[in-house]
Image 1 (cartoon, one colour):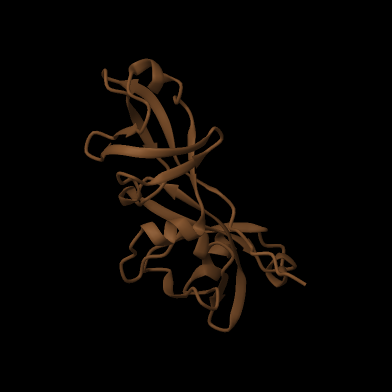
Image 2: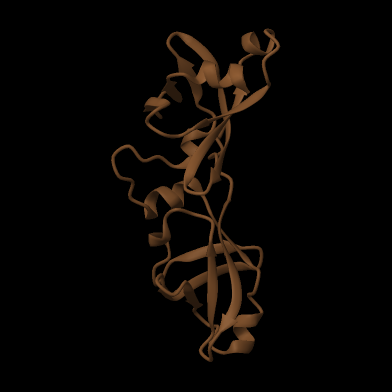
Amino acid sequence: MEKKSKKSPKMLIAQIGRAVGLKGELKLNLHTDFPEQFKKGVSFETPRGKLEIENYNQKRGLIKFKGFDTPEDAKALTNIKLYSTEEETKKRCSLKDGEYFWFDIIGCEVIEGVEVVGKVKDIQRVLDIDYLLISTADEFIKQDLPKTFLIPYIDRYIESVDIENKKIFVKDAIDILKAS
């Protein structure tokens, strides 16, 4: 019996904005912390098929795709969303020590001391701080505590992250939960 390879789901990483100038350039609205993914020759999935980057100007937030050389051509791409997979993202991006992809953090167990407080359900960014949205562990819900709560992803609360074992060790999260 043949095993099917499990392909990771597509993730939104950018949305194309309005056409700019006369050469087919477009505004690019990023949904990623890794603009280095946008290099000449790299292709991204869209609902209309693959688009290959001809040029990307990070400072100006402008992108040009191969084969779209006029404002009229470029306008046809307005509002198109660019997607990547986890595998493609990992290949294209370099993480610094202590940095993690959101898709690696989501699903991790959150542990304070020896107690499992919950699981990371999602990540929300408010201004420049990421917050872990935690689905509270059943034992705390039985104590009439909220089903979800937020922990700021800052050193004050995050002690360590073990991506390999899908665990995040925290401090004072139970206090946040009880105050929620």
